[in-house]
Amino acid sequence: MPYLSLAIWIPIAAGLAVLVYGRDRDAGLARWIALVGALAGLLVTLPLWVHFNPHTSDMQFVESAEWIPRFDVRYLLGVDGISMLFVLLNSFVTLLVVWAGWEVIEDRVAQYMAAFLIMSGLINGSFVALDGVLFYVFFEALLIPMYLIIGVWGGPNRVYAAIKFFLYTLVGSLLMLVALIYLYRVSESFSILDWYLVPLSLKTQLLLFVAFFLAFAVKVPMWPVHTWLPDAHVEAPTGGSVVLAAITLKIGAYGFVRFILPILPDASRYLSGFIVTLSLVAVVYIGFVALVQGDMKKLIAYSSISHMGFVTLGFFLFSQLGAEGALVQMISHGFVSAAMFLCVGVMYDRVHSRQIADYGGVANTMPRFAAFMVLFAMANAGLPATSGFVGEFLVILAAVKVNFWLGFLAATTLILGAAYTLWMVKRVIFGAVANAQVRELADLNRREFWLLAVLAALVIGMGVYPKPFVDVMHTSVADLLAHVAKSKL
Image 1: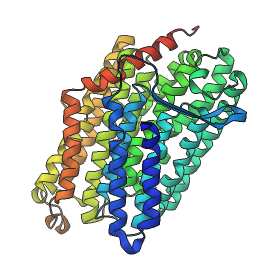
Image 2 (image 1 turned 135 degrees about the vertical axis):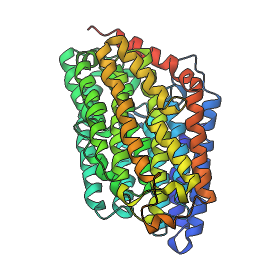
Image 3 (image 1 turned 90 degrees about the vertical axis):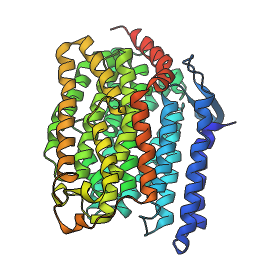
Image 4 (image 1 turned 60 degrees about the horizontal axis):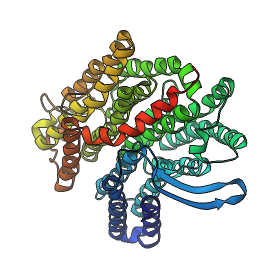
């Protein structure tokens, strides 16, 4: 079965079906088509987990077909222990987003659901593409639905945020296109796996590193090209924030392990100190920035930048612990950030405010919601036995093995994360009821309860027993690091 093609094209086909059959005059039909499409998109990815062989680093479920023969551009798909997990994560989050917007979105329902489904297929394409041109097409095309989601269903400054998001990511991607064309000229192939074998001088690698780095650093986003993310999160609807934080940021980090590290190993080692420095700035400085935020969405957005700094730090420590910790952190952040933004969305739907000062004492009127919110906040702060702890602990352990002070600076995220997260929880959830709107809040309905319950189970399950996730990626990570270790530096 062509599972990877199905993972790409079923959500896209479902999105087109929503547009054709689920017009706004029948929003209910649009919702049901979207839900069925998202569920089907998730179900076809489950065999990837069931039939995956974790004992080989070779690409699995490979599909290949001619696309543009003149330039040897192929429709070439495959997954290893790194990319397979993100296909599953994306398909799962898409189902959550469709479910979360079930009763909330009332304007242009068909277009809203279609945008998420089409974007889900394009994101899966980015994670499974093994041809440079195919990857670039998916990587760029997913900007369009996200641009529309922010620009049409966003807040008052949605147009500004959407354009800023689009321009930042597009400019970086254009340099990546130049790098892809150069690699084709020296290898006469657009196959990413062929590029791993191309010998390149250090000077050439450094130039290509800059091109790839700008494309992926903006997407992560790394400091100082992070400023588009808080604006995009604040203006995006809840579903847009969930996908943006849980999935699209991961494509940038994925680019480091699929392109930069294996294709440019010498440059990666040469510039590792630079990347580690930027990562630590994101972890420490952005953590302090999050402390002073009055908007819950903006606080969680800055928290995401800090947590993604851990990811890039882990990759450039060039150790099994660090790389696996970074990948686990990516999966965990997908669950936790999605849950945090959904919690903010639950409150916003009732009060129509994201300002921390407008809340207080929510636990008195929404006890079930408060329990979930506190759990996810603890995971965001890296509490042991939650998924947020596992990745951070592995990266800190790897950093300490390289240099104690490096590990010490990385560990400050546990203190800062607890500070800004608990400060927000204290002012929003606990204390006396602050205003009349909070006093009249209704607790979670059935849909919201099960939505958050599923995420809570995943956050605790991954925190208590992360072994299945680590086992899947272990061989692929070991092979990647062995390839980088062969560099001349």
